[in-house]
Length: 438
Ligand code: GLU
Image (cartoon, rainbow, N blue to C red):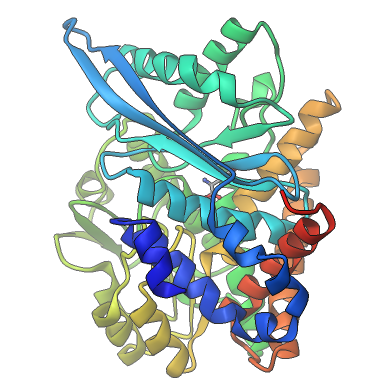
């Protein structure tokens, strides 16, 4: 099947990587379930239900015309409307969107909330663009995308490069063209239909997942040092929750380098630099004073810590980094980003007995709160932050339990990768089986 996947989807290495990892885990399930094979469930799952590619022309502030490419891959809707973020980053291509959409199917199934899997985005780079340029780009992007989405069809959200500002512009254009106010996007502003705790949810959820993994080993987060990569939404709220639960997050990073702060990252300063000023982490070290230093280039994984939470992007933690983390005594690695750990690194970590939480389980808190935002919109209701956070904690504990229990049931105790892939797959596969050859 490996060769067939590569042949049918040429030049999409990230998609191949995501598929191979899932298929490896599924071997015992497929051996036991002849009905899945007969219904060609896996073959159908590997083929997105629909893939939309479109031109996004826009004008910069000087009147120059640019052309970007837009994507929306509607992967699987057996469990609910397609759900998944939009990524705006120069690295975005069809293979990247397909890997993310494929992961999203299983992640969303694990939340238990009735959402299918999809993903989208563009190779547009918002960095260095003015607000009005970003607005014009978002309006052009949505002018095409709007015909493919809807609250019962496909509900995009943010991802790398798409935050509250972009969701606002995208939502405005959807509403203008369709003349409908509906929960068609999640991650909206709190005052106009967004859920409390949505910006925080991915990071908070990942910390809850890491805490559950540690509890299984008779430990908790109190007093643990943590190395966190990234400085976007996921990293910021990972750091915030680690601190709240008594751990000491030492680092954050961006594409230029990383910061180590012996006193623990000051979340307010990091938020000011990243969320308000849209600056770089190097400024953090300058403004923080004595306890922090900036390392240009280099690897954040060189910093010794008890737990590691990769929260930047795919394949950011490779074999060398895993070897260093193991040598420094890391106990747990929990993925805030999507597929940040390479397959070689995952093998090394698990062979060394490190607890490893794969993104499709560990970072599912973001999309879970998106689903809660959809519920609130559908009911024209607004929940309190306390209620949303209570739900988030319950969902993350459930996901951890499901993965743990499924791995045990299939003879792979402690293997959260197998547990997440199998449990997510079973939910989608059973729905597909019940719904016939679609
Ligand atoms: N982009 C996020 C993820 O990777 C969130 C998706 C959503 O909220 O729909 O899960």
